[in-house]
Length: 434
Ligand code: PLP
Image (cartoon, rainbow, N blue to C red; front, side, top):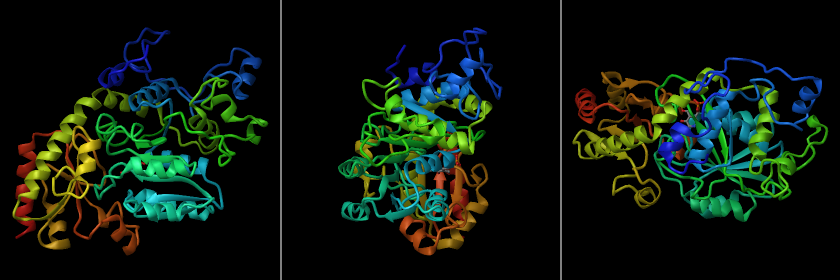
């Protein structure tokens, strides 16, 4: 049965009851492999002539529920999980772009994505052109015949800027390219990026989706209607030599003859780069993350409500130098935030105490209930000093372009009582400004 409501999807989609055991909770299928009925059955599975479980590096029944549930919640057709968010991003890039081709990406990205794109992929001949995505002409100018996708984050981490996904999707589609959006910091119900025109969502499930800071995971979700047969993507619409000439578009493309329409990219990732490099999610982590998904709509609401209260409080605080949160009427992206984030623009707030780098360091060193670490969107409130941690490997120029000033503190608002978060920040601000 297909469920329309997000709260229902979060607890029901992708799973009814385990037919073997009648278990109501999603079981952890802790198995590496699955029996073949006979040699012919095994051969058909390996040839992709019959779809079914082979080996947990490629698929697992627990993971399958997570994939189906998150695809439903995003309004996509299909998904594939990975060991982490970084693996999901790498798998999209490595499937869509080959040596000699390029990616056009926003300046405002998570530091790990910047190093993946500009250092690691560069070693394999894929170039990334980082551009200021506020400037449509600059995005257009960066695209050439060898560009294979446009990439951005819904809300840049840590800058908290709102990307204009509708506008970027318009540019991408004009050039027959997909728009890939990292929606880690604003999963449903915080934002609906497929409705805004994104073609592919990548998400670190480690963050708000899992929500409890226990388990790493990643996912690639496709909206399902991108025309991969436009001549630019022979990896998808072309003979796959590793499957004796199999064509993923013919079997999984968005057309009437397909066996599973709208699965072309995710199936290609599963049976290509995931098969060959193996960064699969563990069934245990998939089940932990599924527990997080069940309360995601409720938690997201609380995260967003509290973030707004804290951002407004910080903006009025005499010891605070500046606040980056697009839900403030003074923020340059306020209009976009109102349009695309019905609950509020996520739960990250960038800010700095007065006193520059040294004051920011003192604040991070003196929070008590709040933890200073490198993670975000846990149920607990966290602070990160990005220039010295998550974005440390970026050059000064890249830091400036990403909006990560030396005093930048990223606050990730958790589920505690807002007054307790304020009390801790108040005492840390006092020490920071002393
Ligand atoms: N994307 C964003 C926006 C992130 O903030 C992170 C990690 O912080 C990642 C991707 C990578 O996720 P993971 O740590 O699960 O590999």
